[in-house]
Length: 546
Image (cartoon, helix red, strand yellow):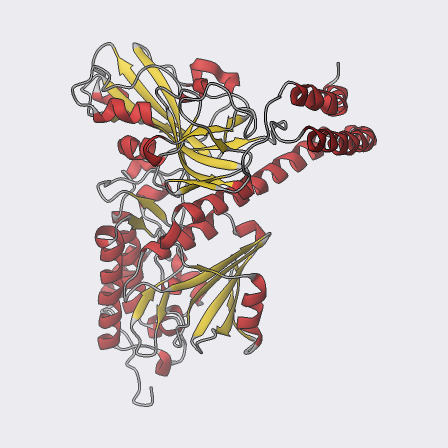
């Protein structure tokens, strides 16, 4: 049977399957539909808390039973030894965050023979109505028969585990499907255990495997069959769903016919784009909720338009979006950045989570954000003197900063980087340090801005796991461009900082090229040429008028 007509058959038959499932669910009406708290998690439909000693229940939906021992919510698969602790339920996204406590117990029990977790994949313990979200990554744990040579486990991107020199771990870039089977994880002489972990903005580093498991992974669920409640209400709901799905089936046939007439490439492109957009939306929603109080204030889009409407003043525009000047209700001036749809995915999450974690005088403050459908907006503190590049690249000597101001700015930027790299609870690597991303307040004190390319990692990590180069040509560290030059770390920001210092002290009298071309110059050659001419390095002083 062709896939399209199989899909039509499935949709057409769904009402009958729904009715059959409902007929098999007898029992008394549920006592209440009001959300019930279990610890910090509110349990409501389709979930339902059931007593631990109960053998059957008519409450909740099939597969959505929750047990609550010691006020801790667990999925009710195994009531005597619950395995999946519920950390958070996203009812709006039909998803939930869970942690595999059996794996955690293996790690935390140092006297156990299972320091290496039991060779049971978490996904094999789950079934309908749940599925593992594509937002997760895969944590692969290896238990080898003998120690691996260092060059082997480094080549394979493995990190050593605390269980001994025969156990290793790595993080796969993406959640793979089942088509590849065990071959995706095969390592000669080793057994593999695969676990999903949530991919949070650069935190998924292999050596953090205990924290990754503790943080949990994301599940999604499908709308379940009805269970429990009044029989008449159930039959009424079945009738409504049956009619609705029958109508949908009748409309689906011509749609399938039209889709099959399009070229395969166009159909595939449409599918990929829609799926990617949906995943980005869910990822943004989940990450923002997960970080709770760490996230800045969330504004409605109507509030954002009100903030900017009073001034209607455009501050600038770049590849990521347009920036307008605005004013909050407390009369504070702000810079409001409207992100383009195509640039509002990972960049948006990085901005909210990175600046939301960093609070210091040399880091620009993020007052709030807006996420409403395709609209993504960031609200920063307003910096009256703009960005550093308009001073060091200016053709007007009066607008150029002198040595004293340049030194103060350089020290301020260095302090900001030191805070991001070492003093923040989560280490942050900026990856785009350049004059355009340094903003100046009314006293010309610098603040680091634009965290769209930033990566977050644990404070104990000295290396950063990433794929692909990021940054601006002329400021990118060699190891970011190609791993053959070394590992990516906080030192990559230090390299960019050094290149920016060279531009700060370059002096506009000696350069005739426009600002956009400056980052393309190879500075070692430029410095050599100037010292060879006896010019040295120069900078214009700020006039008394400034």
